[in-house]
Structures are given as structure tokens and as C-alpha cells.
Length: 383
Image (cartoon, rainbow, N blue to C red; front, side, top):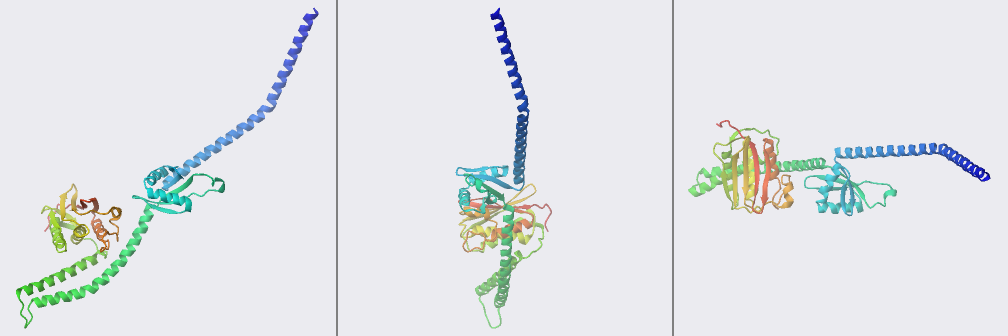
């Protein structure tokens, strides 16, 4: 009986101790957990909110940079990585250009800003400054902005200013040449008419008339050159293209060269153009082809119909245009000849453009060069 009572008391004691322990643990749990859980939840919520704000700010930054055509690029020893969409495209272009990559590495060492001219764009690059705490980072963030339009406008303004100065100089020289040319032409004509007391042979008279014609033609060409620098309104009317091309051919044949010149154009082909302007543009294109620097033995003016216009190809079999000049052909003062001003192609393109046409380089290489003029076609009859 005593054993049974002892067992019962022992079980009751353990049960009481277990109950007390359970109540203690329950009290501790409900006394401390709510406070800690609330603080933890608050901190986690705050961190998540700040992370979302940071991510949204980053996305907005990248979007704004893309709209402004600004590339955010990470530069490392391994290459470039774009952070935004424009930065990715810009990185791909820069990594294809060895010279650009070398200059970017110099930018990291020496600082900037730096202007890089690519085949189709111009970039202004600089290093994104950061505080000293991040100075140990192996990566360098480059900010690359597309300044192609501003760069082109600045260059165009500079060229226009230089062209205006050249125009004034040309006008002064032309005025000084026109008077002696007129005197030369007049005296040659007077001598050819046979003044009193002077007998001339037929050969001498022909030579004098030739001098007169050459002096008069030279004076007319000086006037044509002067007209290029004046803001003259284009007189667009239907003209026979074959006639213009034959005139250009005759003018080119008067130059010193050993190049055969051929014209392929139907007699009835009519274009809407300024007669003087189209003649000068084709002459300038042909003049480049027959120059000794081009080394051409054959030059062809070839005109053909299009759906809404006429295409004129000026093709030669010369040496081609050097690679370093191909992207700047139609800029003023760009020339591969030591005796040239580099205005021929620039003026030809300007004249064609003012007539509503287009001038482009079709191809160039060691076997020849071809320029193409596109003009509007006219169906009206020409009187």
C-alpha cells in the first residue's frame, strides 16, 4: 500500500512540475516574442520597400539615360558591359574598334573627357566620379553620350565659315582675272579681223580666233565658279539630259588627260533640273575621274530610267578612293590630291541637292569608282 501511495505521489509531483514548466515556457513565449517579431517584421518590410524604391530608381535612371542617348558602361580589363540598353549598343560598337578601346583605357588612367569618332556616330566619354569608399573597385563606370548631331553641326558651321572666306577670295581673284581676259579676247578678235596694214595667213587667223574663243570660254567658267558661291535660285525646267552630257563630255575633252569618255543616254530622256547646275555637277564629277590622280583610262556617263526619275552613273576604271577618305568624301576641303582644294564633290552634292536630287557613292575599289546622281524625270516636251 505504501508502494502504491509513493508511486502516486511521485506521478503527481512530476505532473505538477510539468504543468509549472509548461506555464513558465508559455509565459516566456507570450511575454517576449510579440515584441521581437514586430521589430523584425518592421525592419524586413522597410528593407523590402527601400529595395523596391532603389530598383525603381535604377530603372528610371536607365530609361532616362536611354532617352537622352547616354550610355552607362562598366569598363574592366576584360572589356565593356552596358548597364542600360543604349550602353549595351554603344559597348558593342566600341569593342569593335581597337583604337577606341585603347583610348578608353587611357581615359581610365588620365581622366577625361574624351571624344571618340566612330564610323556612324560620335561619342563624348567621361568617367563617372565616385567617393573614396568605392575607389578600390576594379571597375570603372564610363558615361558615353551620343553627340553626333552637335558634332556635325559644329563641323558644318566651321566648313561654312571657311567656304565663305574662300568664296570672297575667289570673287576677288575672279574680278582681277576677268578684266585681262576680256582685254585678251578683244585684242585676239581684233587681230583676227585683219587690222589695216597687216596681212595674216589663214593659219595665224585661226590661231587668233582660237585664243579669242578660249579666253571667252575661260571668262564664262569664272562666272560659273562665282555663281556657286552666290545664293542663286535654281531655275528648274525640263531639259534634255543627253545634250547636257555631251556638253560635259566636250568640256572634259579640253582638259589634259588620256582618258576615253563615253556617253550612254537616249536622245529623248528629259529631266527636271537647272541647266547650269546639272552641267556643273556632272563636270565636277567627271573632272575628278579624268585627273591623273585617279589613273582612269575610261570614263562613262550612263543615264537610265527609273520609276519616278532618272539615274546617272559616272563610272571610271581608275585606282579608287583611299579608305581614309570614303566617309568624308562630300565634306569641303577633303581631297586625295595634293593640287586640289577638295571642293569638287562637296559642290556637286550641294548642287544636286538644291535641285531636289541625290548624289551618292555606289562603289569604289582598285578596279574603279562609280558615283550616282538621281534626278526627277519630266515627261513634258522640250522646245
